[in-house]
Length: 228
Length: 228
DNA sequence: CGCCGAGTTGACCATGTTCAAGGTGGGTGG
DNA sequence: CCACCCACCTTGAACATGGTCAACTCGGCG
Image 1 (cartoon, rainbow over the protein chains, first blue to last red):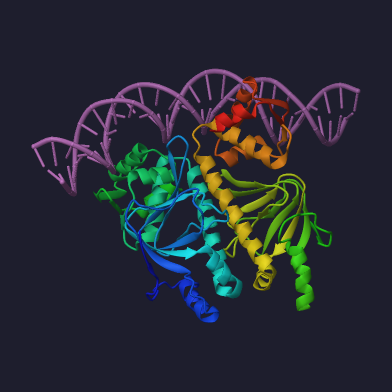
Image 2 (tube, helix red, strand yellow):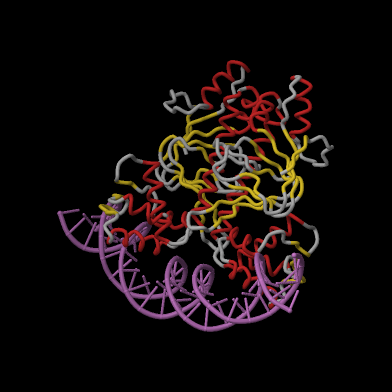
């Protein structure tokens, strides 16, 4: 995990951008404390783990992150896959309830909670953005619950593909950053069932699988019907 | 749904208590706008419904509220049961994503979002409390996801009983405010499966069912083992 | 080439759902 | 006060779906 102070110009259209707020802060306060730093994490490496102190929260700049929980019996529950622009690790408790790992090589911005809280006291935009982040996570978690309650396995996989397509591309070919196991742990299925669903979709001509990590959605309407 | 301006003294140990903040606000601003009002809702009645404008959010003062979503095919997903002191209906979108209904007769405090947002601009405590509420909902939603992923039906029902016990009583007899159908919709099971699980627990001597809505937990350890 | 991790496929099995038939208890009206 | 009703709950039997276990394939890399 290599770190460097964040100083590049942001291309994010996001309202907050805590970094710019930071600059204001530094000017105003004359403080030299760093609010956000850019961090590079290689694929498969941990960003934070369950139980560790929740000193920071994070925003993905590039790459894909999975946030997950390890159950007692060795199973794993994936709470979310995060892509560029999304915030994760924001928690009320002093310790993280979940773990986060890089699925691909990632660059992420690491924000110091305490510093951001200070900023929030002065800057209305920072404040609103923070709440916005929390609400977005909440919204996602609720949608995830709905997903887990879906009846069929096919229904879940179809909904996942559509969701991922909507978030990562405007085209019809979706690049899956994650393994089948990751998808299974996210949907509450086994790897075999995910595999079978995808194979079935392919047989039905609803998708094509040009390579193991690429899915071409040939018939979104059919998928949407499945996802009900 | 009868309403009255909230003027009673709060017994809640909660940090915020938006009401008192309101008073400060009114003094400071000379505003006559009402931030929170007490509302009484009879059992079975709706508090807000999916798609309606999210003008207010709410805090339970007494009674039990269910927050749920109706799926296309007539099924229903219950996202949470809320008891005294808990906040619900706090959302980022302009419209509610979920519905809320009173399970028992309830008194709830209804807060006007816009007014609270204004307050948050001035009052640090209000601000922190708002974020706290959002985070608590987030935390609950994540736990609910975990619950839905549990393997067995017995596991889910046991976990539910223990959780409800922990929140509503210090004793061993739990009063269920909700129907079996509610429990089923919360756990992602059918009413029959919930019923069978309870019957099984009773046969195993883990619980007693003195009446249909009362459950006496005879062996918490056994339940905790089941809930794994 | 052979290994290894990831993915696929098949057969069997366990679990929860579905459908259908009672049971129970609290409230209402005769 | 009793009988009836209705919503809620329980129970049983057949069935469907996804989990489990095991064998096999595929593709990349030393």
